[in-house]
Image 1 (cartoon, helix red, strand yellow):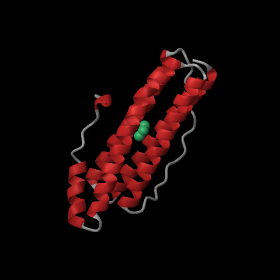
Image 2 (cartoon, helix red, strand yellow):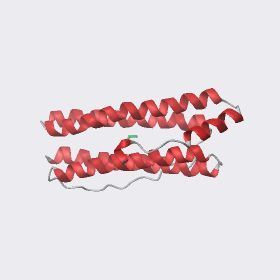
Image 3 (cartoon, protein in one colour):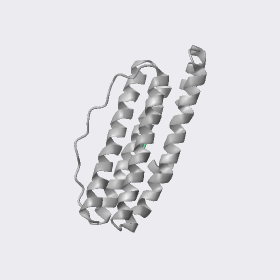
Image 4 (spheres, helix red, strand yellow):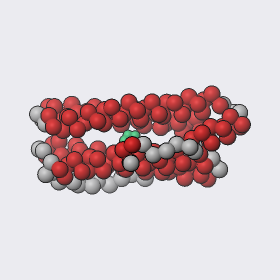
Length: 167
Ligand code: FEO
C-alpha cells in the first residue's frame, strides 16, 4: 500500500469514527427527548460506524500499512426537530458516499487494485446507508406533528437489531 493510499484510508477511518461520534450525539439527544426507540436506532448506527472504521483499520494493517489515527472533531448537540435531524443524517451519508467514491478513484489512480476491491464493499454499504436514512426521514416527514404517529415510529425504530457486519 503506497503512502498516498494509506493516508487516504487513515483519513477515512477518522471520518467513519466521526460518523459514529455524530450518531452517538444524536442518540443522546433522543434519549434526552424521551424517544428511546430513536435513541436505540442511533446507537446501533454509531456501532455500525465503528465497525466500518475497524474494517478499514484491519485492512490497512493486513496490507502491511501503518494506521495513523487522526483527531476527531466534536459533533454538534444542536439538532432541531426530528425531521431536520434526519435530513442532516441523509446529507451526512451522501457526503460519506462522496468520500468513498473519491477514495476508490484515488486507489485506481495509484494502481492499487486490491484497495479498490476492498472499497467495493463500502460502495455497496453506502447504498444501504443512504436508503436507511432516507426511509426514516420519509417516515418522520409522514408523521409530521402527529404525536401518536411519532410514538409508533419510536416503537418501531426501537426494534432495530444489529446488522450482519456486527454479528
Ligand atoms: Fe460508514 Fe454511515 O457510513
